[in-house]
Image 1: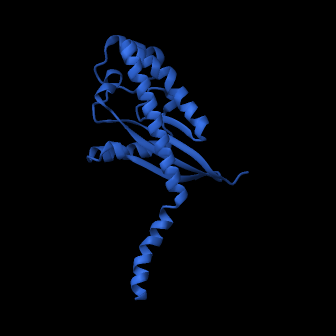
Image 2: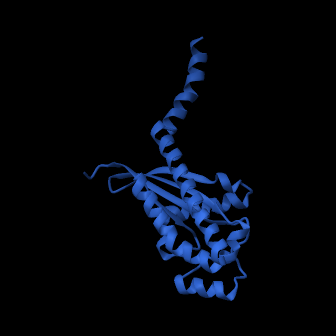
Image 3: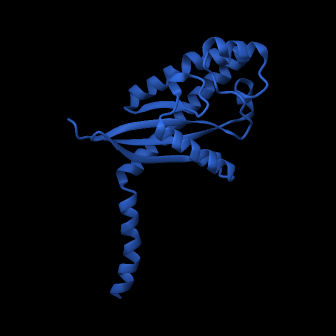
Length: 192
């Protein structure tokens, strides 16, 4: 009977080693924050579109998206942002870790994975600091193409150029990965 117990317990122990409760808790917390950021931003964009069309929505995104991220970051203790391989705002340019995850999301999307479940999290260490990092893909919906598609209206393209002179966030098609929510939180700082 003992060998059976070992066989049953062994996979459980391996799973516990690879998914510590702290990481599960952090993943859940990060996912909820990413959803809150997305929901709040989408609500503001829909409101902006209904009040003044795409031009107003661009201004809303320019002004409110950073404020929403900053508010949620201060409230939660996480660093919360958006990033993309084709960033509109140069402040959202991905770092090397984010780039690698975005490329992985692209591969998974091309293979038919459900965009709504494309998430990645891991603990990374840099200079004695352990950081929990999390990313959740942002799918490109039809409404996104108004400002991120290939055939932008002239006034939309002009407004984007005015607010984001280095913009590269156009040419998307529905179903593309537009970018990702990126969250990080220091969990151990050995330098203190």
